[in-house]
Image 1 (cartoon, helix red, strand yellow):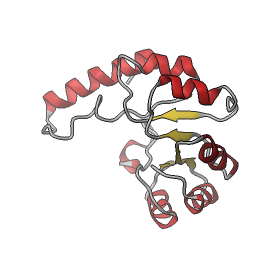
Image 2: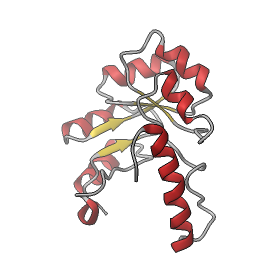
Image 3: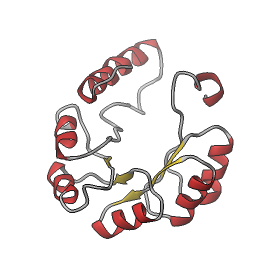
Length: 155
């Protein structure tokens, strides 16, 4: 995918749990690595290879530790609500946060207003139980554009 779409998309890899997997993904063209957890070795390997590191963290201590160890954007997972992000951004507004899990068209703008620099969108965008065909891809593009409109872009 990174070979075919490199000039149109920024391709990365998610659910990366260790440094070895991060290195493999980056060697295959991933430009960013997203993890559901805080693994310092994964952050370090990602940064050493010149990719963007987006480690997962939840508590203020984990968020600060992820940032201090090189995380470029910290994936707050699971995003337990807009108020949590707002409260975290109060004292930690210097750390870029990306709430993930539970982000919907109904609350995405609230996350940005609360201080998020990005959001991770899963089941409200992608239906993994539906067959991938032209109709599904058409609906996916419409929904992605709705999210992007709120974020200030387009697909």
